[in-house]
Length: 122
View 1: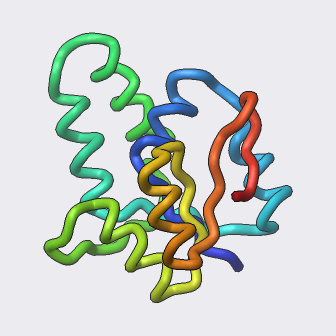
View 2 (view 1 turned 60 degrees about the horizontal axis):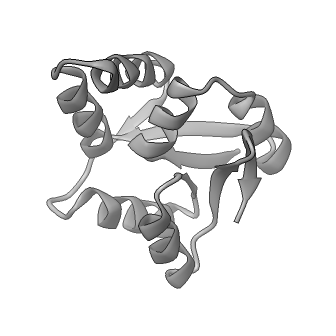
């Protein structure tokens, strides 16, 4: 079963604009095990503790990921942790962060993103 590591940006995007992201991901990668790194979860928790619509979106993103498997992070920046974890485990990363997508491509790590409200492999 393919591991898919979710970035907070992807979860925020699907929380903000509901899509068929789960079904689309299953169609693209087959059965998958969703993973949320602890450092990405911390980003969402930090955003959720603030006020406003962004905080509400972060709380929805946390709810979406509540049944995901969790994996530890080292001490690096979150994006570096995502790239490293994916490269080590052969996982795909789900993100809408263009800078992270460039880093994943440079590291030869598979990625999925959203385009036109649908999940696509990049």
